Image (cartoon, rainbow, N blue to C red; front, side, top):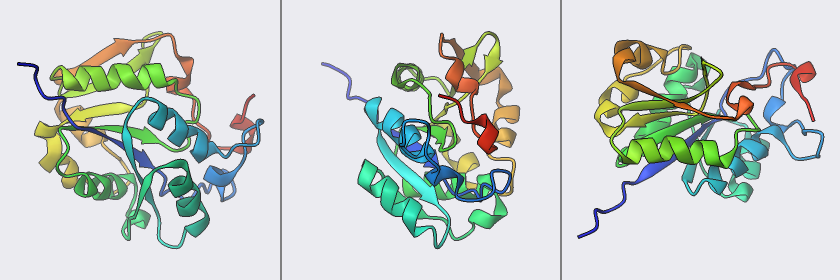
Length: 193
């Protein structure tokens, strides 16, 4: 009998303030006119994942745009406490999943094939998995269900770094030809064609 496919949930973290960018970062268009966060959402969706996007309270334009892209949107009331709080909130919203692929909404160019390789490693039982380009670990990062409670306990601005540090030996790195696993947008000058 064929083994049932694992339910891997996509998480799109979109609850930051974009202060270094000058605000409204995720709605800012790329050179093709499509918003930064929309690109990130489309890449996740193209990889075949159902996506839960996390936004901060009151960010209705971003929430509306992400819903129109096909994401389920959840508002993290504790978003001001940092990425850890937003990630814990998202894991809570997708508590029943067999694993999670955590992507950042300010990383708009990651190839769907790269995301699929992270999903495949989770389906094959990896505890933590990430792509790497030329020896540098990138995003998105995948987490197996055995880390559910640790992810739910996250808080503050370090994101999942404490979980990664505790389970460093379990991290599976996947070599890829996708330099975009390292490309994020912090300032307007980071936007490239």
